[in-house]
Length: 116
Image 1 (cartoon, one colour):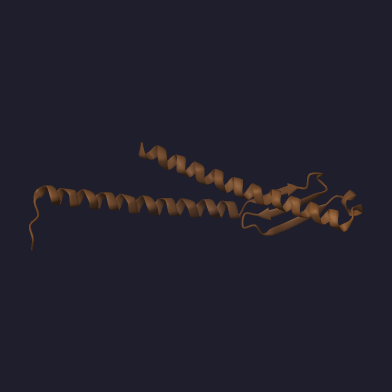
Image 2: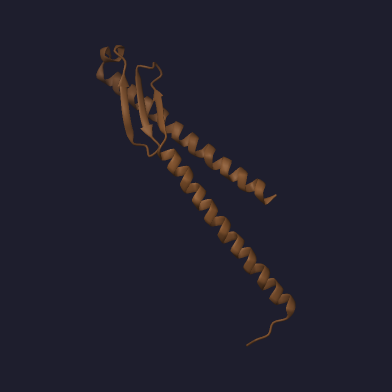
């Protein structure tokens, strides 16, 4: 067996501890990201068309959960109503993206402050 100088052995031990710390931190981040995704997936995001005549609800998985129409909206022509549904859907999708981004930024800030 090769006997390395003490400084090389110390560096290898330090490298091993660093790698172990990186792996532990990575596992924690992965678990926290899974938790964030689970919370987002279970959250209901609702948004309306600009006129509030159509309200679309999506869960965090981007699955359509509900669409509500005002009585007034039933008098609109089908093309206009379709556009309102699309606008409301895009607004709800944007809410999901914003909420996800905010949660990830919060996690990154927390991790960054732990390194200081």
